[in-house]
Structures are given as C-alpha cells and as structure tokens.
Image 1 (tube, rainbow, N blue to C red):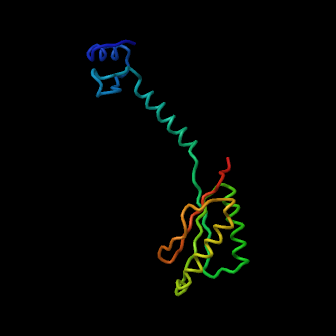
Image 2: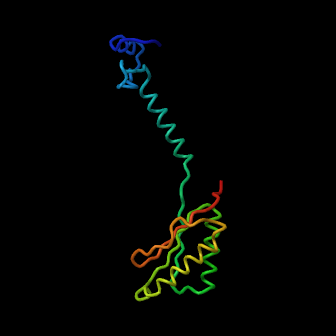
Image 3: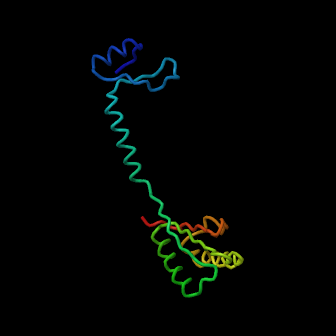
Length: 147
C-alpha cells in the first residue's frame, strides 16, 4: 500500500472501509497496517484451533497395587500396563497402603521397581517411586508413541 504519516494512514483506512492496526508501537515511526480486523481475528482463531487439534493429548492410565500383591495379580496388571504403554499412554502405577500396611513400604517400593524393570522395553521411568501419604507413586512414559 505504501508509507504514510498517521493522519494520511487513518484517512486511507477510512476510504477503504478497513481498520488501521498498530503492528509495532515501539518502532520509530510506529508500524501500522491497514487490514480488515474482524477477518484477521477470525483467521487467527482458525489457526489456533488447527494447532490445538494437532496437539497430542496425554492419556494417563492408572494401575493400583497393594503392598503384598501376589504373583498372579501382579502379572495380570503388568500385562495391562504393557498394553497401555504400547498404545502410547503414560502409566501411573501406585501402591496403596491401607491401615497398618504402611510398615511394608519397602515391599511396595520393591514391587514398583520390579514393574519398572520388567516394562523397560516398553517405557522409561519418568518419576521414581515416591511416597505421598498412603500412596507410593511411580510414573512411566511410553518409549515410542503410536502415531
């Protein structure tokens, strides 16, 4: 369009029935552009929506153990954990300590570390076992996400 002083630019924008939008106010002289502002906002929202649709949504699946989970239950839950990691979901494995079972927190940690070791080909440990109240939690992220 050209370079105009502010007054002329405002006049030109009115003639074209468009808006004068300040692009860079700190520049000397300030940089402005004559555009249809509503159309600009619409295009911007459309771009943001497209970016949001492309963004991956992180799914977190949980698996709960007791401090003295037997082998059969452990294997059953481990197979589910494998499936979750293969599908590209993060895994939150936790041991829940009921009542006085908190005295077995070392067994809970051993159980979670064993799970992490056996699932190491499907995912990597994002957070080592950490005791929070009555729960000992560990996060495992998938190694290769499914596309």
